[in-house]
Length: 222
Image 1 (cartoon, rainbow, N blue to C red):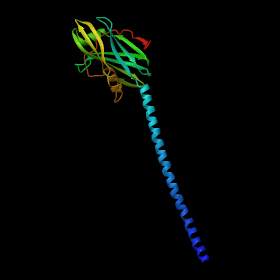
Image 2 (cartoon, one colour):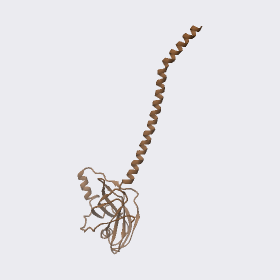
Image 3 (cartoon, rainbow, N blue to C red):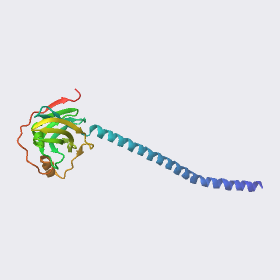
Image 4 (cartoon, rainbow, N blue to C red):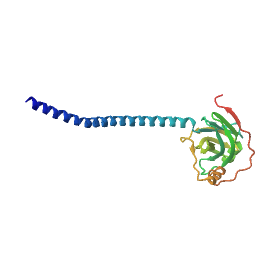
């Protein structure tokens, strides 16, 4: 009997030894699955962190211009363009139009830099009156095209309520802020870029000769 027990014990021990590599493989697979899941969770959290950082960077450095009109006198008004972002821009084209018109009535070509946090002003009384005619009451809109970081952008239309009687500006008040932010203008080659700089919209009335006044700069909030 003791000999039989010893033989059976030897058989059980050899069987257990043969199962050790299998158990080691199963344990290794389990740890591999756990490490893989932990790695995937880490990658997901890293991707979310990078996405938040990218969104914050874009919000901080993406160009954002604000446009408004200011009445100076019965025959004169200024346009005020404020760069709300940190990045500097190069103003290229200012467009004015009535909301009832599909194309701008007036276009003013520019080449003026605007540093982040600064404001650019220019007299626009004659162009506004040319856009509204002698008698008009309703909304007018302005849009700015500009360069920033090697790309061309265009703002949405900023509206203002104006009242003109007999060629005199009686009132000029901002109406609203556009819901859409500044957007990039896509191009299809250098010819398209040169053409767009000259004329953003469809062909309209040619510009009238106008001597450009000197722009004034001042720090916002001063």
